[in-house]
Length: 361
Ligand SMILES: *Cc1c(COP(=O)(O)O)cnc(C)c1O
Image 1 (tube, rainbow, N blue to C red):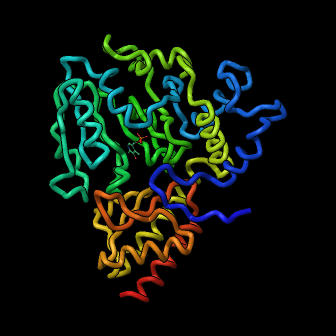
Image 2 (image 1 turned 45 degrees about the vertical axis):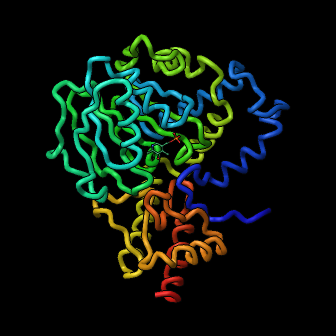
Protein backbone atom coordinates (compact mmCIF):
# COMPACT_ATOMS: atom_id res chain seq x y z
CA UNK A 1 0.00 0.00 0.00
CA UNK A 2 1.21 3.48 -0.80
CA UNK A 3 2.26 5.65 2.09
CA UNK A 4 -0.08 8.51 2.91
CA UNK A 5 1.42 11.96 3.27
CA UNK A 6 0.65 14.43 6.03
CA UNK A 7 -1.84 16.73 4.33
CA UNK A 8 -2.18 20.26 5.74
CA UNK A 9 -4.57 21.43 3.00
CA UNK A 10 -7.13 24.07 3.99
CA UNK A 11 -9.82 22.39 1.93
CA UNK A 12 -10.73 20.01 0.52
CA UNK A 13 -8.81 18.67 3.45
CA UNK A 14 -7.46 15.44 4.86
CA UNK A 15 -9.96 12.70 5.65
CA UNK A 16 -9.35 9.96 8.23
CA UNK A 17 -7.50 7.08 6.60
CA UNK A 18 -9.82 4.58 8.28
CA UNK A 19 -12.79 6.27 6.60
CA UNK A 20 -11.20 6.11 3.16
CA UNK A 21 -10.34 2.46 3.68
CA UNK A 22 -13.88 1.65 4.72
CA UNK A 23 -15.30 3.51 1.70
CA UNK A 24 -12.88 1.62 -0.51
CA UNK A 25 -13.85 -1.72 1.00
CA UNK A 26 -17.54 -0.92 0.50
CA UNK A 27 -17.21 0.76 -2.87
CA UNK A 28 -18.13 -2.08 -5.22
CA UNK A 29 -20.41 -4.02 -2.95
CA UNK A 30 -22.05 -2.20 -0.07
CA UNK A 31 -22.81 -4.67 2.73
CA UNK A 32 -23.37 -7.59 0.41
CA UNK A 33 -26.03 -5.82 -1.66
CA UNK A 34 -24.00 -6.08 -4.85
CA UNK A 35 -23.87 -2.38 -5.64
CA UNK A 36 -22.15 0.83 -4.60
CA UNK A 37 -23.80 3.47 -2.42
CA UNK A 38 -23.28 5.74 -5.44
CA UNK A 39 -25.60 3.55 -7.48
CA UNK A 40 -28.47 3.33 -4.99
CA UNK A 41 -31.77 5.15 -5.17
CA UNK A 42 -31.89 7.86 -2.55
CA UNK A 43 -35.43 6.61 -1.81
CA UNK A 44 -34.32 3.03 -1.12
CA UNK A 45 -34.56 1.67 2.40
CA UNK A 46 -30.82 1.05 2.44
CA UNK A 47 -29.92 4.60 1.49
CA UNK A 48 -32.50 6.16 3.79
CA UNK A 49 -30.95 4.15 6.64
CA UNK A 50 -27.47 5.43 5.71
CA UNK A 51 -28.74 9.03 5.62
CA UNK A 52 -30.66 8.76 8.86
CA UNK A 53 -27.73 7.19 10.68
CA UNK A 54 -25.44 9.98 9.52
CA UNK A 55 -27.88 12.56 10.85
CA UNK A 56 -28.33 10.75 14.15
CA UNK A 57 -24.58 10.42 14.66
CA UNK A 58 -24.10 14.14 13.99
CA UNK A 59 -26.90 14.90 16.45
CA UNK A 60 -25.19 12.71 19.05
CA UNK A 61 -21.76 14.25 18.43
CA UNK A 62 -22.99 17.83 18.79
CA UNK A 63 -25.87 17.17 21.24
CA UNK A 64 -28.23 18.89 18.81
CA UNK A 65 -31.51 19.70 20.58
CA UNK A 66 -34.68 18.10 19.18
CA UNK A 67 -36.14 21.43 18.03
CA UNK A 68 -33.39 21.78 15.41
CA UNK A 69 -33.46 20.34 11.89
CA UNK A 70 -30.29 18.98 10.35
CA UNK A 71 -30.10 19.54 6.58
CA UNK A 72 -27.67 18.02 4.09
CA UNK A 73 -27.62 20.56 1.26
CA UNK A 74 -25.57 21.32 -1.83
CA UNK A 75 -23.70 24.32 -3.21
CA UNK A 76 -21.12 24.48 -0.45
CA UNK A 77 -20.93 27.10 2.25
CA UNK A 78 -20.89 29.88 -0.35
CA UNK A 79 -24.43 29.13 -1.49
CA UNK A 80 -25.53 29.73 2.09
CA UNK A 81 -24.32 33.31 1.76
CA UNK A 82 -27.40 33.91 -0.45
CA UNK A 83 -29.64 31.28 1.08
CA UNK A 84 -29.51 32.89 4.52
CA UNK A 85 -30.86 36.33 3.54
CA UNK A 86 -33.39 34.76 1.13
CA UNK A 87 -34.78 32.77 4.04
CA UNK A 88 -34.27 35.00 7.04
CA UNK A 89 -34.05 38.62 5.90
CA UNK A 90 -37.38 40.34 5.15
CA UNK A 91 -37.13 42.66 2.14
CA UNK A 92 -37.41 45.75 4.37
CA UNK A 93 -35.34 44.26 7.21
CA UNK A 94 -31.74 44.63 8.31
CA UNK A 95 -29.21 41.95 9.09
CA UNK A 96 -26.14 42.49 11.24
CA UNK A 97 -22.84 41.04 10.07
CA UNK A 98 -19.42 40.86 11.70
CA UNK A 99 -16.43 41.19 9.38
CA UNK A 100 -13.44 39.18 10.56
CA UNK A 101 -11.91 38.24 7.22
CA UNK A 102 -12.33 37.03 3.68
CA UNK A 103 -15.20 34.61 4.26
CA UNK A 104 -17.24 37.06 6.30
CA UNK A 105 -16.65 39.70 3.65
CA UNK A 106 -17.98 37.38 0.97
CA UNK A 107 -21.06 36.66 3.04
CA UNK A 108 -21.60 40.40 3.51
CA UNK A 109 -21.27 41.16 -0.20
CA UNK A 110 -23.74 38.46 -1.08
CA UNK A 111 -26.29 39.47 1.57
CA UNK A 112 -26.19 43.06 0.26
CA UNK A 113 -27.76 41.81 -2.95
CA UNK A 114 -30.89 40.94 -0.98
CA UNK A 115 -31.34 43.66 1.60
CA UNK A 116 -29.90 45.96 4.21
CA UNK A 117 -26.70 44.84 5.81
CA UNK A 118 -25.25 46.54 8.85
CA UNK A 119 -21.60 45.66 9.39
CA UNK A 120 -21.81 45.88 13.15
CA UNK A 121 -18.10 45.34 13.68
CA UNK A 122 -14.99 44.75 11.66
CA UNK A 123 -11.56 43.41 12.45
CA UNK A 124 -10.13 45.72 9.79
CA UNK A 125 -8.82 48.34 12.27
CA UNK A 126 -6.84 45.48 13.82
CA UNK A 127 -5.50 44.39 10.40
CA UNK A 128 -7.62 41.26 10.88
CA UNK A 129 -5.21 40.14 13.61
CA UNK A 130 -7.76 40.49 16.43
CA UNK A 131 -11.54 40.37 16.92
CA UNK A 132 -13.28 43.47 18.32
CA UNK A 133 -15.04 42.70 21.60
CA UNK A 134 -18.81 42.82 21.65
CA UNK A 135 -18.73 46.09 23.63
CA UNK A 136 -17.38 47.69 20.42
CA UNK A 137 -20.15 46.36 18.17
CA UNK A 138 -22.81 48.62 16.68
CA UNK A 139 -25.78 46.26 16.57
CA UNK A 140 -29.05 47.29 14.86
CA UNK A 141 -32.21 47.71 16.88
CA UNK A 142 -34.26 44.99 15.24
CA UNK A 143 -31.87 42.88 13.24
CA UNK A 144 -33.37 39.86 11.45
CA UNK A 145 -30.25 37.97 12.53
CA UNK A 146 -26.58 38.41 13.32
CA UNK A 147 -24.09 36.57 11.10
CA UNK A 148 -20.45 35.82 11.83
CA UNK A 149 -17.78 33.28 10.92
CA UNK A 150 -16.51 31.45 14.00
CA UNK A 151 -13.21 30.63 12.28
CA UNK A 152 -11.68 32.58 9.40
CA UNK A 153 -9.94 29.82 7.52
CA UNK A 154 -7.65 32.05 5.49
CA UNK A 155 -6.55 34.55 8.14
CA UNK A 156 -6.43 32.04 10.97
CA UNK A 157 -8.66 34.18 13.20
CA UNK A 158 -11.13 32.39 15.46
CA UNK A 159 -13.71 33.41 18.03
CA UNK A 160 -13.09 31.80 21.40
CA UNK A 161 -16.47 33.12 22.57
CA UNK A 162 -20.06 33.16 21.34
CA UNK A 163 -21.76 36.52 20.72
CA UNK A 164 -24.74 37.38 22.92
CA UNK A 165 -27.67 38.51 20.80
CA UNK A 166 -30.70 38.03 23.04
CA UNK A 167 -33.72 37.33 20.83
CA UNK A 168 -31.89 38.07 17.59
CA UNK A 169 -31.10 34.74 15.89
CA UNK A 170 -27.40 34.02 15.75
CA UNK A 171 -26.21 32.65 12.40
CA UNK A 172 -22.72 31.22 12.17
CA UNK A 173 -20.46 30.00 9.39
CA UNK A 174 -18.73 27.08 11.14
CA UNK A 175 -17.23 25.62 7.95
CA UNK A 176 -13.74 25.22 9.31
CA UNK A 177 -14.27 24.56 13.01
CA UNK A 178 -17.46 22.52 13.35
CA UNK A 179 -16.83 19.34 15.37
CA UNK A 180 -13.38 20.55 16.42
CA UNK A 181 -14.39 21.48 19.95
CA UNK A 182 -17.50 21.46 22.08
CA UNK A 183 -20.13 24.10 21.41
CA UNK A 184 -23.59 24.82 22.80
CA UNK A 185 -25.85 24.47 19.75
CA UNK A 186 -28.80 26.04 21.58
CA UNK A 187 -27.09 29.46 21.41
CA UNK A 188 -27.59 29.51 17.64
CA UNK A 189 -30.49 29.96 15.26
CA UNK A 190 -28.56 28.56 12.31
CA UNK A 191 -25.18 26.85 11.99
CA UNK A 192 -23.82 25.93 8.60
CA UNK A 193 -20.62 24.30 7.45
CA UNK A 194 -19.21 23.36 4.08
CA UNK A 195 -18.21 19.73 4.43
CA UNK A 196 -14.73 19.72 2.96
CA UNK A 197 -12.88 20.96 6.06
CA UNK A 198 -14.01 18.87 9.01
CA UNK A 199 -16.84 16.69 7.68
CA UNK A 200 -16.41 15.06 4.28
CA UNK A 201 -16.29 15.74 0.53
CA UNK A 202 -16.75 19.20 -0.99
CA UNK A 203 -20.05 20.36 -2.45
CA UNK A 204 -22.05 19.23 0.56
CA UNK A 205 -23.04 21.73 3.21
CA UNK A 206 -24.61 20.84 6.54
CA UNK A 207 -27.11 23.27 8.05
CA UNK A 208 -28.48 23.00 11.58
CA UNK A 209 -31.50 25.26 11.94
CA UNK A 210 -33.88 25.99 14.81
CA UNK A 211 -37.39 25.09 13.74
CA UNK A 212 -38.94 28.47 14.43
CA UNK A 213 -36.73 29.93 11.66
CA UNK A 214 -38.31 27.69 9.02
CA UNK A 215 -41.06 29.11 6.83
CA UNK A 216 -39.79 32.69 6.72
CA UNK A 217 -38.41 32.62 3.17
CA UNK A 218 -39.39 35.42 0.84
CA UNK A 219 -41.68 34.38 -2.02
CA UNK A 220 -38.92 34.88 -4.60
CA UNK A 221 -36.66 32.37 -2.83
CA UNK A 222 -35.83 29.52 -5.22
CA UNK A 223 -37.41 26.24 -4.17
CA UNK A 224 -34.03 24.58 -3.91
CA UNK A 225 -32.79 27.25 -1.48
CA UNK A 226 -35.79 27.17 0.82
CA UNK A 227 -34.89 25.70 4.21
CA UNK A 228 -38.46 24.71 4.99
CA UNK A 229 -38.84 22.78 1.76
CA UNK A 230 -35.53 21.05 2.44
CA UNK A 231 -36.59 20.24 6.00
CA UNK A 232 -40.07 19.02 5.00
CA UNK A 233 -38.46 16.70 2.47
CA UNK A 234 -35.69 15.33 4.65
CA UNK A 235 -33.10 17.12 2.44
CA UNK A 236 -34.41 15.03 -0.47
CA UNK A 237 -36.55 17.51 -2.39
CA UNK A 238 -34.29 16.56 -5.28
CA UNK A 239 -31.55 13.96 -5.43
CA UNK A 240 -29.13 14.79 -2.63
CA UNK A 241 -25.35 14.38 -2.82
CA UNK A 242 -25.78 10.76 -1.78
CA UNK A 243 -22.17 9.62 -1.75
CA UNK A 244 -20.93 12.72 0.07
CA UNK A 245 -23.65 12.30 2.67
CA UNK A 246 -22.65 8.64 3.13
CA UNK A 247 -18.97 9.51 3.41
CA UNK A 248 -19.74 12.23 5.96
CA UNK A 249 -21.63 9.57 7.90
CA UNK A 250 -18.48 7.44 7.95
CA UNK A 251 -16.57 10.43 9.34
CA UNK A 252 -19.20 10.89 12.06
CA UNK A 253 -18.88 7.21 12.98
CA UNK A 254 -15.11 7.59 13.12
CA UNK A 255 -15.45 10.65 15.36
CA UNK A 256 -17.63 8.68 17.75
CA UNK A 257 -15.04 5.89 17.84
CA UNK A 258 -12.38 8.48 18.68
CA UNK A 259 -14.36 9.54 21.74
CA UNK A 260 -16.49 12.26 20.17
CA UNK A 261 -16.04 16.01 20.10
CA UNK A 262 -14.68 16.24 23.66
CA UNK A 263 -11.82 13.90 22.70
CA UNK A 264 -11.20 15.82 19.47
CA UNK A 265 -11.07 19.05 21.45
CA UNK A 266 -8.30 17.68 23.68
CA UNK A 267 -6.39 16.40 20.69
CA UNK A 268 -6.84 19.65 18.75
CA UNK A 269 -5.71 21.67 21.75
CA UNK A 270 -2.52 19.64 22.02
CA UNK A 271 -1.88 20.02 18.28
CA UNK A 272 -2.33 23.77 18.14
CA UNK A 273 -0.35 24.34 21.34
CA UNK A 274 2.58 22.40 19.94
CA UNK A 275 2.58 24.37 16.69
CA UNK A 276 2.08 27.87 18.16
CA UNK A 277 4.71 27.11 20.80
CA UNK A 278 7.21 26.24 18.09
CA UNK A 279 6.37 29.43 16.19
CA UNK A 280 6.56 31.66 19.27
CA UNK A 281 9.80 30.12 20.50
CA UNK A 282 11.58 31.04 17.29
CA UNK A 283 12.73 34.35 15.84
CA UNK A 284 12.54 32.77 12.41
CA UNK A 285 8.79 31.98 12.31
CA UNK A 286 5.94 34.29 13.25
CA UNK A 287 2.17 34.42 13.55
CA UNK A 288 0.60 37.86 14.00
CA UNK A 289 -2.77 36.90 15.47
CA UNK A 290 -3.79 38.03 18.98
CA UNK A 291 -3.29 35.07 21.31
CA UNK A 292 -6.98 34.76 22.26
CA UNK A 293 -8.06 34.80 18.60
CA UNK A 294 -5.62 32.30 17.19
CA UNK A 295 -7.29 29.58 15.19
CA UNK A 296 -7.06 26.01 16.42
CA UNK A 297 -7.63 24.72 12.90
CA UNK A 298 -5.70 27.00 10.52
CA UNK A 299 -2.31 28.24 11.59
CA UNK A 300 -0.75 30.79 9.23
CA UNK A 301 2.90 31.56 9.76
CA UNK A 302 5.64 33.49 8.03
CA UNK A 303 9.32 32.88 7.59
CA UNK A 304 11.67 35.73 8.52
CA UNK A 305 12.76 36.00 4.88
CA UNK A 306 10.13 35.30 2.25
CA UNK A 307 12.82 34.30 -0.24
CA UNK A 308 13.02 31.13 1.82
CA UNK A 309 9.33 30.30 1.23
CA UNK A 310 10.05 28.26 -1.88
CA UNK A 311 12.85 26.14 -0.40
CA UNK A 312 10.75 25.64 2.73
CA UNK A 313 7.84 24.32 0.69
CA UNK A 314 10.06 22.16 -1.50
CA UNK A 315 11.70 20.58 1.55
CA UNK A 316 8.30 20.02 3.14
CA UNK A 317 6.98 18.34 0.00
CA UNK A 318 10.02 16.09 -0.12
CA UNK A 319 9.20 14.96 3.43
CA UNK A 320 5.54 14.30 2.66
CA UNK A 321 4.32 17.44 4.43
CA UNK A 322 1.87 18.69 1.82
CA UNK A 323 -0.10 21.86 1.07
CA UNK A 324 1.59 24.24 3.49
CA UNK A 325 1.51 27.23 1.13
CA UNK A 326 -0.55 30.08 2.56
CA UNK A 327 -3.58 31.50 0.75
CA UNK A 328 -2.57 33.74 -2.16
CA UNK A 329 -4.14 36.76 -0.42
CA UNK A 330 -2.03 36.31 2.72
CA UNK A 331 1.21 34.70 1.54
CA UNK A 332 3.57 32.80 3.78
CA UNK A 333 2.57 29.41 5.10
CA UNK A 334 -0.58 27.93 6.54
CA UNK A 335 -0.95 24.62 8.29
CA UNK A 336 -4.55 23.42 8.47
CA UNK A 337 -4.81 20.92 11.29
CA UNK A 338 -8.38 19.67 11.16
CA UNK A 339 -9.70 16.63 13.04
CA UNK A 340 -8.28 14.17 10.53
CA UNK A 341 -4.74 15.58 10.88
CA UNK A 342 -3.11 13.80 13.78
CA UNK A 343 -0.65 14.96 16.40
CA UNK A 344 1.97 12.91 14.53
CA UNK A 345 1.54 15.23 11.53
CA UNK A 346 2.07 18.32 13.67
CA UNK A 347 5.10 16.71 15.33
CA UNK A 348 6.59 16.00 11.91
CA UNK A 349 5.94 19.59 10.83
CA UNK A 350 7.49 21.09 13.96
CA UNK A 351 10.55 18.86 13.59
CA UNK A 352 10.95 19.95 9.97
CA UNK A 353 10.54 23.62 10.92
CA UNK A 354 13.31 23.34 13.51
CA UNK A 355 15.59 21.61 11.05
CA UNK A 356 14.92 24.17 8.31
CA UNK A 357 15.55 27.03 10.72
CA UNK A 358 18.86 25.54 11.78
CA UNK A 359 19.98 25.35 8.17
CA UNK A 360 18.77 28.77 7.09
CA UNK A 361 18.57 31.17 10.03
C1 LIG B 1 -14.16 27.05 2.87
C2 LIG B 1 -15.04 28.06 3.51
C3 LIG B 1 -16.16 28.60 2.86
C4 LIG B 1 -16.50 28.26 1.42
O1 LIG B 1 -16.88 26.95 1.27
P1 LIG B 1 -17.38 26.41 -0.16
O2 LIG B 1 -17.91 25.08 0.21
O3 LIG B 1 -16.20 26.37 -1.05
O4 LIG B 1 -18.42 27.33 -0.65
C5 LIG B 1 -16.95 29.50 3.53
N1 LIG B 1 -16.65 29.86 4.79
C6 LIG B 1 -15.60 29.37 5.45
C7 LIG B 1 -15.33 29.80 6.85
C8 LIG B 1 -14.75 28.46 4.83
O5 LIG B 1 -13.69 27.96 5.48
